[in-house]
Image (cartoon, rainbow, N blue to C red; front, top):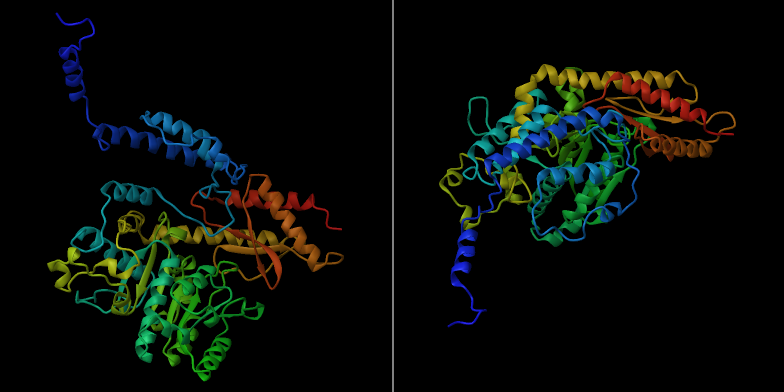
Length: 516
């Protein structure tokens, strides 16, 4: 007879059998996808309905979220509603709400129902379109969407990958994440072209190459220059002042480039900006391109924000001369209702870019690439993998059409013009620079007993007090050593009433300041 503690194999085999029939983990179970997305869509719709009443800036301290959640990830699953409950209770209260109609601090991060739908579908498909063969439709739709946007902007045909007759063109375009990437890849292409011209193909030859931009150019440009291997001593930041409304002065550019040539250096790259961050200044594209051409330098136009406005005929003149530049980038995620990330880079000679960015490992070789009839977008960017960004851009243009997109731009400009007029009705304030698009630069001005230094402090305090209310969010900048506030219209939910409400709050908050 066996002992009483003898293992019963029947019992254990029964347990094993039960385990064997347990449903396996299926992360894309159709019923879950449907229910999860329904819950997420309900959350999004509720968020857009209520975000106006939320504090624009959160009242949280650095590190707050570490006290809200477990230090280690959970071992076992939880229903989605538990996850969503934690999102609402802990994450949303710590968000700065860029979608709020009371957000005026920075250039907008616009969005739309069509863009969200496109991004959702692209995320679900989850293609990695590094070559045409890896994602034929994704590649061709991106090219098509970029061509559509080029038509809206009236860019010259030289930026197109195909001519009007369908033949292969010399230009090309690609959707990147941000303007920083557009600057980096074009800087590298310009660097390599300059090294080939000078007969120095080694990286150490970059010590003689020089790049140029106005001092109002976005700070990311100067970072990109360093990443591209340019000597920091050869990065020329040309001062811009009120006499040009803070735009790059062509005469100063010419003087700087000629001085470098006289010193035995090689002018390599010039960045012109249409709509600078601090003041919306517009560098004279045509004049800059003419000067750079005489030195053989690459010209890039950063039109990240204001480029979108140029789909309206009344703003297109800001791009005059673009036919003479080498590249231009526009970010529809700023002002053209296409959610992050979506920066469109156009180049006049796609081969100059792909010669620097191309990779061709054995495992990516295929007949379509070898035919030279397709565009492999991996060869126009730093990385290999890439998202299906073209879908959301195409869906925005296909769904809303040119007329609605122009209406959107004009509405924002109209609201900014309204705010500019309100500022001018109060003699405590001044508009610091002419308004070009949908941003107004203003400040409490120095007058009477209020010195410039006192006015600077008053503007600091005004911004701090406004932001503490949670009812608005403003940011500042400095021009000619003076502090000013930026009022950037453009949130997709913004209406005239939000602009007027912000103005009333500014007046009340200024009344409470002591400026004696």
